[in-house]
Image 1 (cartoon, rainbow, N blue to C red):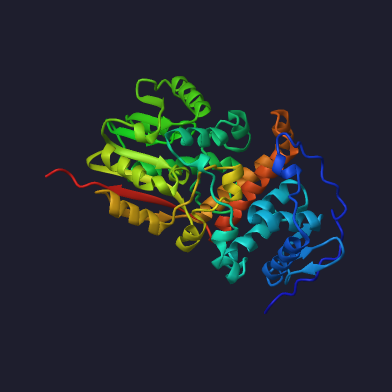
Image 2 (image 1 turned 90 degrees about the vertical axis):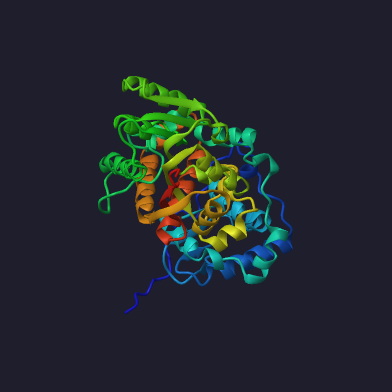
Length: 426
């Protein structure tokens, strides 16, 4: 039995006037790109083709409604909406949301529909010409040793206080592992500890283990490992993270067991019994995946174990988008790229002596984690303002968190815990 979705009739929000955008902070949001009439016409046709057959509603100010029923997208400024999409594609789609030119009462629901049909949104002829119309990744965002520091700083050095507003008390910025859904925010710290413990158990971290952590975050994994009697060397490129992580280590009385260093993974020295790296490979860039995995191999002692947590995307979509510039790269993670499971397996096989021994996927848990972060970020909007971030930033981060949650809810994105092993010396 199917359920009919009535066409939307109410006009809530249709006449809302977006707040002015600070052109100094947000030049590409404040200025609608100049687009010729043919460009806007083609963009409108692509939008009709992409959205008209989907299980959602798209409503325009003149009363036109596209779609087959479901979550509502309210387009407030069609000219600007089509001009942005026609000139910068999905970057323009995100910037149009930041500018307030479209909205959605259920943003995650609408984006989940789009993520579920990501491979089909652009017509096949345009897909084949992707290299001609898609924006290329800026050379300045390559993850060289210098570029990686700049890229990481742009996200993780925004403000420790900002992250503390929506993360839980563990300050863990990666997928948790829950016992069941839906979860309350009060359960998030335990779910983050469950995730960390699984990784430490995979790497067989215990009393006396020499552990290298690549990607410190704000120090929770290092603290939990040290409590097991481990000696931890943790590397980060974020000064804000390093400073707070060191403070937390001192306050926990574990400074004799944990060293937090401002250091690129390529500069790491020594050998370790175990290595843990949580959602750091996403910031490495495809060009440097072989270097990253060779570093794991070189730093790991014979018989050692690597526990790796990684967000993954479908292999065909990774290949299609790996050289193009995306909204998430422009505004959230410059230089970042999600690998596919196939890419991880191939890189490990061709560039290291490591073996992928185990892989566990738990994407639904990331969707739940993101829901809790997003709800808390929304609830604490005034505190975000008090930190000096404006309404465009709030829309940017609301879109980022909803966009990410939708990726996991649709199955377009997944998250994996890997165990990589190294043969002992004979």
